Image 1 (cartoon, rainbow, N blue to C red):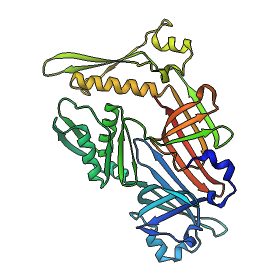
Image 2 (image 1 turned 90 degrees about the horizontal axis):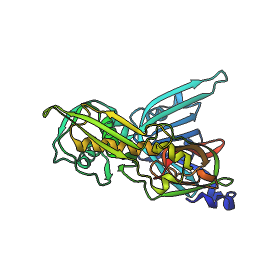
Image 3 (image 1 turned 90 degrees about the vertical axis):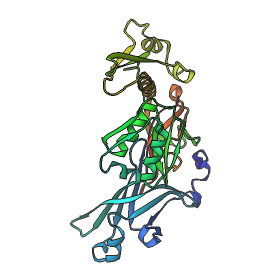
Length: 357
């Protein structure tokens, strides 16, 4: 949904904030939805999404049917948006239920849970993946174990075996994402493991649908070169790999000339960072992958922002937010976290973003 049109149609019923809830594939009726005073969904890259419901129902304690329905382990799907245009924001399961009884006799029930990626945090595994099993194959195997489909961008082949040493599957995905410069998240029944953002773009404009923004540009920690050093125990020989900052137009355009000098080292300070990765990398190829990933992460940290907007279900991890009328902070950003909330104040979306390079 393009919220740049909202100012023209905000008073129409079609743009009334709305949400829907399915539990065990059963759509909750209007009577139940009226007892829900707040619903929120928190979406992230590289970690499970979560949800929270606040239910004001004085009859809950005496209703066996409702207690059985809002119970740990129940499958749930939450939709949010507007009257004629709701989208599924999370499919997961309930993991926690709590309540608060106030002095006036009011009964507030809180229901919380996670998406299917949360199952990857349970248990630890030792497994050896042979060289012929690519990182892409490993991601797909993890997705299958979570009963998820997988959409995985191309990953360059690695050298040597991959060891999952008493780690849970989420830690394995985090490691593979870090080493390859990827990020991942779950939407519905699909695990996305991506190098580049999805094509979806939302334009946010100051004075229209952008309600607040806090941005920060910092050259602290930015260097021109990153070197990763390792040790080959078999050959008793050191090795290293280097990654040099790619001063792309998108990156350089954010900086004034003195800022560019800080990063390149022309201001008199060293502009190289050395990472000692003995035991973490076994080959030059792995050292190069780590150096490239660290450089990519460093570049992404140059410009970050947090803000909120008129509720929009299209703002989600991996999507692009285009900020308008924000001076040198205008431009495209990638969403790393989004929180969607509907309560008595309406529908709003909060987000954390970093520059799109």
